Amino acid sequence: MTGSLDQNIARSNYGRLCTDNKSVNDALDYTFSLWPYNCRMKLTERQKKFLRREAHALKPIMTIGDKGLTPAFVEELDARLKHHELLKIRVRAGDRDARDALIEEMLNNTQAVLIGRVGNVATLYKANMKNPRLQLPVQGS
Image 1 (cartoon, rainbow, N blue to C red):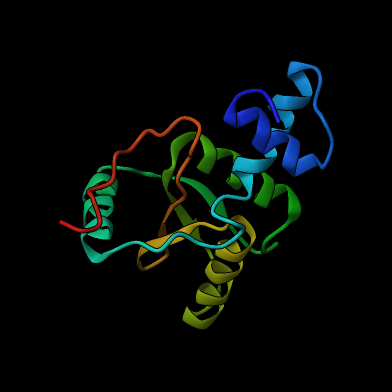
Image 2: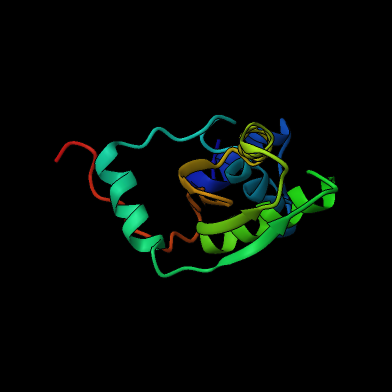
């Protein structure tokens, strides 16, 4: 198979040759949306601490309320995670168990990692492999 590594990944994802750049870019977007293999990242405590420190000054940019988790909310959340990588969400749910269930459902739908939760505010992280904004500390050190 000839072409760049990215094109080879795109070809393998679609199971066919992508001849124009648009289909290659679509395949790459699809590939990176599934990273890492459609499961959540594993972060060390050091990396979580780094992300909590980075998120300290952030304000919640989304609020989920009585309607619960709608497909439109998940789509918007995924787009904002792709752009920002690290963000805070205000969760307006009845009690702690309902909030925890709603946060867990968000994490499952977006493949994000919960960095922390204080009261009604959850901090989420999802790495953007194409355009990383945050450089996490190395896992081994």
